[in-house]
Length: 304
Image (cartoon, rainbow, N blue to C red; front, side):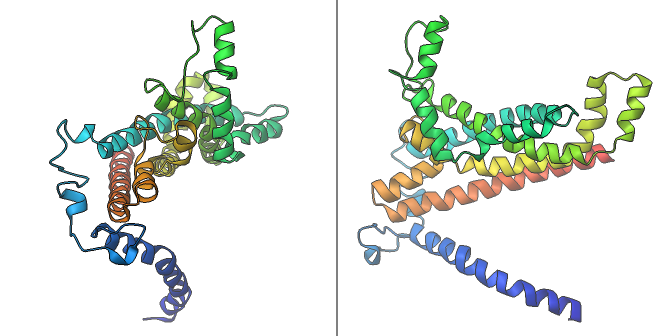
């Protein structure tokens, strides 16, 4: 081992030890609990049950009691809700964020003030924004219902956060409002690094702005754009607070994180909840790996 490698390990070892203490030990402890029937009221009394919490009679997967199929079970519904929320919200936030970033990248008077104002929804804590939207979306005295009635867009007030037909998509809309500035900020950072000479040449040649966007801008920011989408996707897959505050974690909107919280805290099933938590970690990890692999293949094909 040369001197440079030795110095690098000297600086890395404290960080690795800290990560093992802060992240590694709790993860290992959670995995162990997932193999037991531990109850939160008496942690020391749990018995080893192997993979029964995952595949047993009352397990998360291949449960013999799922008479209507896996996707009709509470855990299946939680997985479906989480992926619906993640895919739709990330897609909309990326599209809107790209549009906002393109606008903020233009040179106009008061640009810095507008950039600061755009970040306000993202800067508001999630709990605060969720409560604020919860009041505005209230089915009896909410501002949204009253405005839509006054504008004759609806015939009667709608329970946006209680009706299963609207609840999940209402949460998506609130999340898009809050997180679009985050995507816009990441995309704007990528736009700021683009060379100006290609745009000046396109302007001199009279190339249409849309053609410039699809042929120049989008290919140049595709790498950073994929990174932004990955960050947002990983965050969306562990959604809990927004859904819990807006819909009280109802069965129609429960996420995987909400399912873990319900089993561990409300029901006290620490072992079963830990199995759900471990499964959530694996699902997020596999999703990230598959997405990154697909993005890498796509980028390599386009560069070749």
